[in-house]
Image (tube, rainbow, N blue to C red; front, side, top):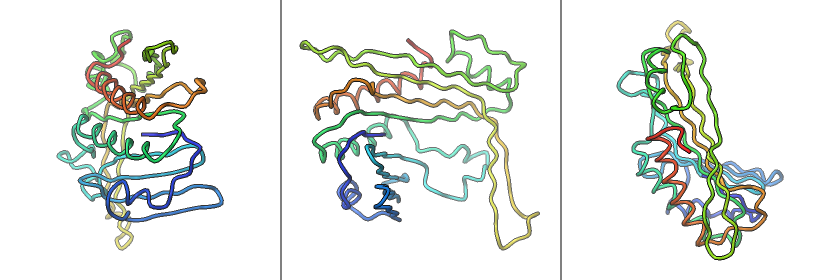
Length: 236
């Protein structure tokens, strides 16, 4: 989740968001960059601030099981609806600390393990009804921006929402290196997977800040859009 604002993030933001302290904190005052991260409930939370933007991200907690055993790969953060509610609540706490929010954006990445490329094509095809996929291919990358307009009511023009969807086939190689052992003892694993990346954002050319109450509505709407794409694929 990304909030675009010209206002700086204060030093106690992590504590106010989570009620605790981060695992680690790195700050570069000259560049205006700060990164804090650590466990939050049952996931890993990262809060990063840079000039004109704040990023909140949820990822799987670092663990050795990420190496690639069939029962643990790919690493994930659980059910989409639960995580959307979680990140939306965190984002609203941040929004309440600022006077003006220029833009909002939500990103998500999904992996689905498959045995090989043809199996991946077969699994992806229902999500791409406007494209005929070739099982004999090797690489696959399909990206489209399906814009939607969000009705603001009154006399205001609708708000343009960018819905960028990227479908691809990937071959992920994970490796665990133990510096105390010989190179031959290092473990690695390779996996084929279908990948979907979703990037939802308000239009950067609008030129008017988003009211706080509209931010809450948009965050809920972003969650609905992300769920729709994750379950139905490339929809208008």
